[in-house]
Length: 327
Ligand SMILES: [Zn+2]
Image 1 (cartoon, rainbow, N blue to C red):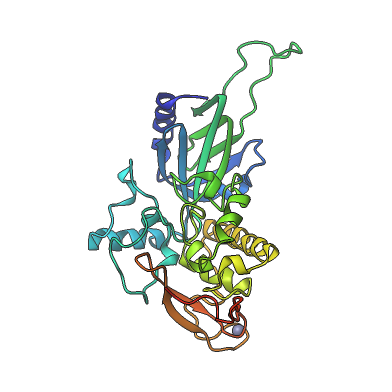
Image 2 (image 1 turned 90 degrees about the vertical axis):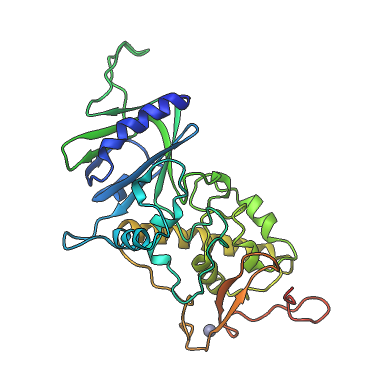
């Protein structure tokens, strides 16, 4: 595996392409759908340890700035967040999640968990194999014959052609979408390495399920919108103790989390907004009145939560109390 300095070189190779739009794609990878990268703008390039992260955003026509850029300008103007291209050491969440703004919630600066990204991210995380490498504007050529005696050039996993006419070629690497440049892939719902067993263990506790879902140790990238939406889809009351739910219900909730996040990412990459079922709604899709309340552990992060008391009935614990009593 290439070490840190090689990764820095890889990042230097990618940086001239930051700000450019991908006009054509190629490569043999089947870990991601390479065509998803078509027409996206490379927004940022970061290296953390032995990992390279490239951020992509949708380009929305040529009429004006993208929603992302608008948000960025707003944030820059208000001094709330540094500009996107600032480079190293930034948490990616602020500049990447414009749709997930929650204007109706009171803002508590500093109360958010660092890196608690809202919704799926659009960072492509590269892990390089032993002979992993990146080339800019050239392909790697065979420098010796292979075992069969062929002089066969290495097959790139990914090729990105940019509007300037230049291109980046990625060899011997694995890649997956993730929500934040430092997320542990085992806790990242968008990662192929997401550890379901660990997530199920975390959910299967006496804690209210809506608290656990926002715990970034187990669900990095899962934010308040996803929490509200998947609890509605799974028909689970947000304050239900995870331990009272059948394992099959928790499995189903995880399935919704993964599917919802992937769909959202897909929409985001294509510049489309996702329609919500319950988040910030007054009625659920079946026309029932929705309850809105600020929920969270005592001393912890409290977030506005929407649920339908009819579609998501409270589960009774053994002693007959509605589950659970808020702390
Ligand atoms: Zn309902």
